[in-house]
Length: 123
Length: 169
Image (cartoon, rainbow over all chains, first blue to last red; front, side):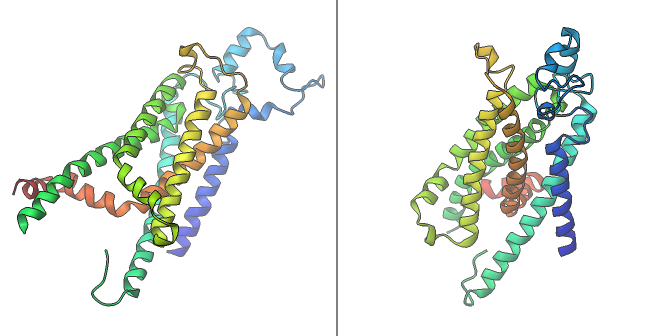
């Protein structure tokens, strides 16, 4: 049980790390652009200003696989496959944590019930 | 004796059923709302605003509990109760911050009121962080109330006929 809980916790941490860094997604989050320099040595957002309007619109919509302004790397348009994959990941994470917390909660309740004098159990 | 018990059970049954429905709705909306890629940005924003309203209803249905907890001294609470209260408090703050940061980077909801958010980068990061924290806190919240969820589901989903029988006696 302990091994299961520890591996679930590690998996959760890894998942959250991947989630918050925008990994697994071919579009980097907007913050990744900060501090970056292009070949001419200009930093963001100066080099971003040189993009053509068409490029900019495509990037904003998350089609070019480069830069989405709005974090998480998501654009305006829905992607059911990616969304469902993310939702399944969230559901698994919630399931693992819920299971762990429920087990700990019931163990604590059981222990505190056992400590009470006979006939005063509260469940 | 049975009349009094049945009467009190009937009185409790409606809020419990309502709570169950509201909680299921909140959970479903949260799952969809945490994944903006699934719905696209515009639906994501409106959906989470609806979620905010449902959370308000959730708070109001538990208002008596909140007031009772606030009136109690910290030392009067048992360990689990204290953890539950603190967790709920952090969950509330996180949810408010999540909504606030979401509004600050909003392109559909806020802009429909004619407001344009000035800087988005910091709020983007905050929105992302609060989203992850919210996920963890909601999972813990569900874990702490797992017994209630199982009890309510058994009563109203898996064997609704029994509870109907109980409330009709």
